[in-house]
Length: 95
Image (cartoon, rainbow, N blue to C red; front, side, top):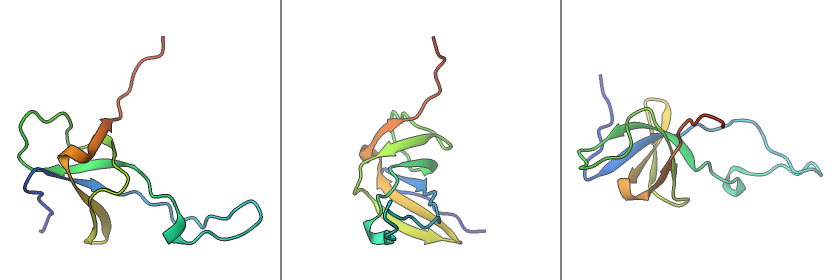
């Protein structure tokens, strides 16, 4: 079995892409290169990082043009520096 293991304070995020074709209101199809990329992803692996504030399984918000996209065993991943993670999505109770 193979797996991706990040090094040098990097984080691996799993990219969830929607395969649905997007169109404008007037019916013009938007090509993949013009679509806005998602900036939220699920953490699947962390390198050895001190005082880490996220964990595997967390959903995080990251910098727009950060990291390197790769495909591994049929899934798309993004390898980014830990410092490019801006926020963690957390559940809170409504008051």
